[in-house]
Image 1: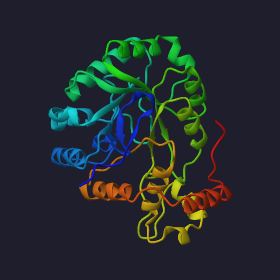
Image 2: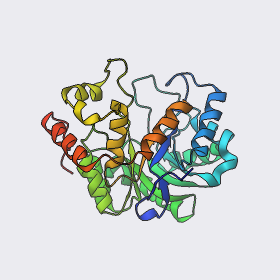
Image 3: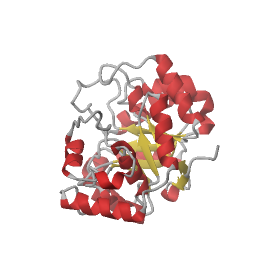
Image 4: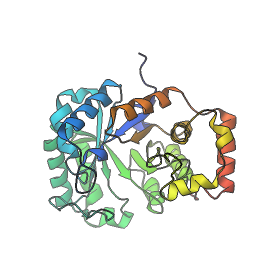
Length: 305
């Protein structure tokens, strides 16, 4: 079978598959649904066997890092590994619906990275990202940014990233130090469309999260803000046999500045379906343009960068 389509991750030079794997699904209870060790092992090998070469995780994601190290640590050369810093080391999981605590100090960052390397049985990260979009002031106040740049100089991480959102993303891009940005985006979450383009113009790698819109409507049921937006837009005549999920995935893949779209699942069948959607290629230009026009009319619009 032909390799999955790849794009260069900005100035990093890494050739990443346009479909990546978001390993938050492996975190298990209490923050997520129960996931057995067998399920975790199966899906991680399925990811690599499908040819996906970009895996994103975090200290905050429960046992995700440990499972990556335990089950595919011996296949480390098969994938690029991205994790995050600023997560408070040793903190108990936050209750569902709440954000875990983050501390952007040199000591906490170093402890977190050391823990991540041990858990994932590796001597380096390919991308180390700041979590939850801290402000420029926070990054500079206690030496957080300099600490991560030092880790880059020593080879502990190859590249430095930001998992960010507006409004702070504008400052992050202007700082000129981030090699990679992870940004939320989908057909029904287009707020960051302009800032994605701005980050790409600056030479950064673009990792999209949420490109599957956090699940799809099933059996006529729509749940969540994103799918409430979907119902406001009549795109049925544009689907051409696609399900809403397939359309939303292809919409994300069609964005010209996307390099990889990280999608999480623990179901090998869902994973294979996502791969098949990627192989279908981008949406036809006329369909893409018309979908954006209708989304604009319905209020699903980009915000200024």
